[in-house]
Image (tube, rainbow, N blue to C red):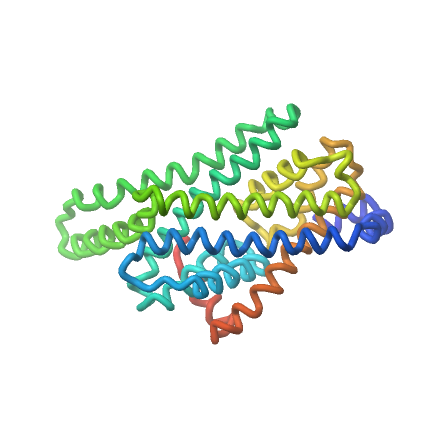
Length: 316
């Protein structure tokens, strides 16, 4: 899709737009994006600590797993990165089979916090840009999916326990399923304590704020801040996250750039500059994933192939 857009718009125009950016502000955008990963890791650490109070959850392990997950999400399609970080942390906490269901539950807790962060960013864009208010229904749909999953996770153990299959084999299977669902639900324990919830939520919102500033810093690098301010940055961040919910390519390449072009058109920015912006913004995200993820993977003392093979066997 990016190649098609380049052919339509012209490689020369896009290349000129990229070449004109301010390097200093591009570095600022990179740094803000990198620091946001630390806050994302801190939020997950708070969630894990509540879900697994009797195990030693180390920040360094959680940070390494977070960076490995971001790295794998950047270079592989689908949700392999999420499964990968759950596997890395589970191995550090004990037996993989024992810890993984609870850790997967904590990922769901962090997803709920991410939805709140997404709505906060979207509110900035929608409040400042009436033209985008017609698309508020898309955000409601984004919130509906985790809400439905939350209800299922909370009610499933209760429903399974009250199901009485006649076959002994089915009874054992239902019992095992109920145990796993209860373990998955324990990943939501962070919401039982106000202090833990506020810790995780504040860290997650800080990560979103830094990402928003990173997107805005790149607008400054392109000298577009007079034409497209923080509301435009919020709209870009919202749109690329909504379209990236089901990534069909590594890092959603192509769709990411098309989204940037469509959003920035609302601020009267030409397709060549908007496409150049989308290419460079994604390049920064991938560069952060590589710069931080590769050392994290080396520190885990395992191979990329081994983590990927295990992650691809994790359901969902």
